[in-house]
Amino acid sequence: MMKRTTFILFTLCFSTLLLSFVPNTEYAPKASIKTLVIDPGHGGIDPGAPGLFSHEAHVSLEVALKFGKALEKEFPDLKIVYTRTTDVMAGNKRTKDEGLRYRADLANQSHGDLFISIHCNSAGRRAGGWYEKVVTGKTPYTKTVGKGKKKRKVTAYRYKYANVWRENHTKGTETYIWAVNKNDAKVSSMNKNFESEEGGEGETSTLTLPDPSDPAEKARMLIYALQYFRKSYSLAEQIENEFVSGGRTSRGVKQRNHLGIWVLQATGMPSVLVEIGFISNKEEEEYINSDKGQEEIVEALVNSFRAYKLKTESRQLSPAP
Ligand SMILES: [Zn+2]
Image 1 (tube, helix red, strand yellow):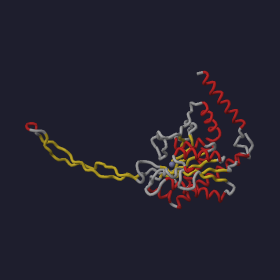
Image 2: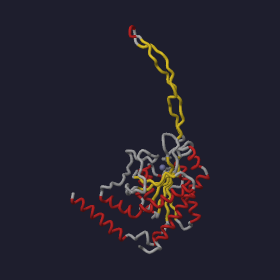
Image 3: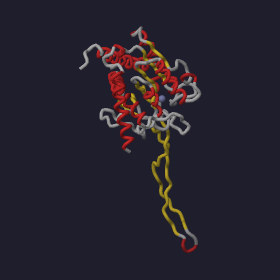
Image 4: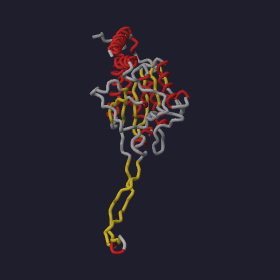
């Protein structure tokens, strides 16, 4: 027991020491945002969540490409790396897991300064809505039961049923960050019951979530916490605020430790995953597919990126406290 504690302490001290040699990204010139990795979720073999007439992979790609194009105009010096630009699994990989690994590797090899993943949300059983059989009334009638001397009349009921339409009404935007500290009061914790389409958690998955009891992984998580968490949170908050300014319903910034967003912690840079709307909601599916909707989403993302870039780059000019 003692040995283990000593080892953890040593690891923590070592990581702190290590961090003191890492240029402080807040103040070093390197803090400028030179490379942005844009990651349209799903693709190819993995269409993502279905809507009534569209799929998540397609909508995410459209919005991601428009987002990149808008940034190119405003920031000609910015290098934009896409994890995919067509309807294929990222890196033309054969499985979702391989695709996720490719996304993370590409982001890291490109020395990205920021990673933004674009997805569509899904809730409930079916896109649009579903019919549910409900009892609407009952009519009494008399029937005879028993035989011989035990024969008697009883009142029974005939039930009336109707198929009632239940609309899939959940809507709004969400931005996810990797949950470093679940006790962070500012961020609403993940809701396990509210499982979106981010599958890949099946037994066949070869990805593993970081194990906080492993000292090496604990040290890596510490580095993530110190270097990227606050920045990721700041961008996520900005994005949700921009959506609200544009008249959207925001479900807020959420943190998760979930295989669907495994890629966020596997990238050595601040990273967020934006759910641009519920494809399972009829109106929102129409909105995220429309030119107007996509323009507004892109505008919110560009505004957020601009604010984040300004904030990050102006900070390095001010003297260290
Ligand atoms: Zn998704």
